[in-house]
Length: 286
Image (cartoon, rainbow, N blue to C red; front, top):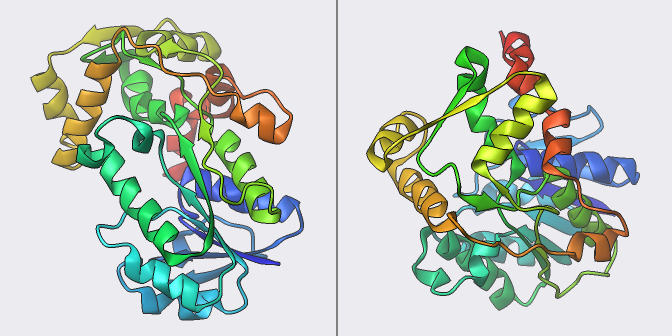
């Protein structure tokens, strides 16, 4: 069996590649800049561009299954290329946003619905993984935490059920190495509901520092976020936080059903990545 991981530069894709290697699966990975992929030497890497499906030709030779994270306005040509290469099964990293009312009108829901629909229309076997908010979104706070121990937020009481990227990867690996999840669309979440303020407190507890939260207006938060992410994402992030105040996001047991293991907590995610909040990772990159 040979599996192509599209999106291996991301936290989930990288963990999927790692999990497949542990199962002794032949792994290939694509990127616009494959030389920047931090993957073991045993992983074959290929230069490929999602906007140019023909660039996947070499990477797809002999591939049985594909792990796909594709943020495309027109995914049909890429999916058609996968079908023409006789890929047997596509595992799509989608989002729980597709299950929300009016998902087609929501920026986040619509972009994943496009990919899901293109894959369904192709007739290929599929599995759609639909996680909620990622625990790794807290990495955005690392700079302000390492600098002055403070996290500026517009809605610190927004409630999430943050999921560890390795939980998503574990389910993806099962889907990619068996037929157990073909045709399924498991919604995935972390095991607990936490406000953003509680997440900040958890980070402080793990790294042994007392952290503070500074409440911002939406305008102040938008100005800060716009330095780092496109405007459409700024609006989406703030909307998601606003809508999550007082919410009770569903807690899924799909991870345990599929893997037989308990979900990783947000605290576990922080422990796995505490160097981010202690400045260690940034020192390594210099």
